[in-house]
Length: 403
Image 1 (cartoon, rainbow, N blue to C red):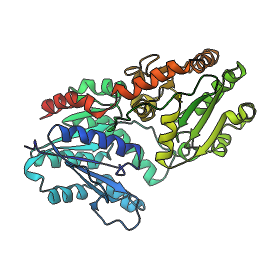
Image 2 (image 1 turned 90 degrees about the vertical axis):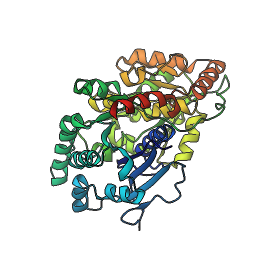
Image 3 (image 1 turned 180 degrees about the vertical axis):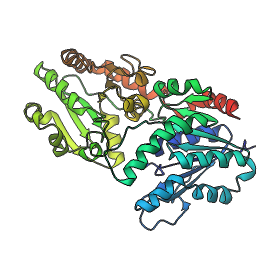
Image 4 (image 1 turned 60 degrees about the horizontal axis):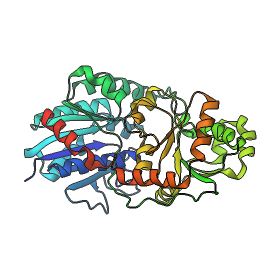
């Protein structure tokens, strides 16, 4: 018997076109397995999409997926920041009003989220916020830029504190909202798959295969925000150049950015790139399945991040996806990662601040015998650390406290 209906609302592009959709789908499976009927209300950039409709080809039992066109132009965007018309239409289409248990707003505009809270309560349900990011002011003095900056402050500082419950994604956000006394459950970015056997490690005597993916070094991204670099592949390049000078053998495949992107931001790294030569290859943006296959086949994935509000508030989906696909991770010791890190099992920690120590850590990691890397890959693939089913009890307890 159904425990009622939960609607998940936000700017995710179903079925899996952005990281937000991957998170929301995994969380939706948790609610489904707990006995709820789940409706997802996302967005689409597909040309010719109706004003509101079902997501084509979406077929997951117990979950209905709906989408509305991504706002085109300032008027539509402003309307989306305050409107909840699509949600009301989905409630009507699903006949969900009599048994609505909750509306979950995923990083939603503040005014619209506040209205969703009131709407959920009017139907006898609860309003929950899924909070996974905390970006600073955008680099824009236009009307939309001003609205976005005000919206972020209002949502994070006022609306979230008045919800009936919060889903967070990091210790930073959990601690930030602890004083509210609200029910809170912390969920990292989860996965809905088990990869089976891990891919084979590179045989001894051959260069280790490294993997990097990220768009945070994209000049287009940096042009929109004052928060600076997110995924510091420039630090990775520096550490790898030092490791190579010490005799370490490796090959890095970097996805999500081109060599031109990289050189535009770090022209001073031209000598390092020349030194690395064929050890590093920039692939740019590639189909998701190709990227996931490269990740699964790598010996390690690698990324380094600064500790800023942006990186502390979120959870690196690249970490959970790598572990879930059976690839250990080389990264620096951030609080959101340390909660799940198992040294020499899920990967190894690399010093981000001390260049010499970071290079030494990389040299050590790249010298690990194939058998030990295979053991790490097998542990990651079989750990279930980030499988959504590992969090069923936590979410069930959370919902009992919310309801």
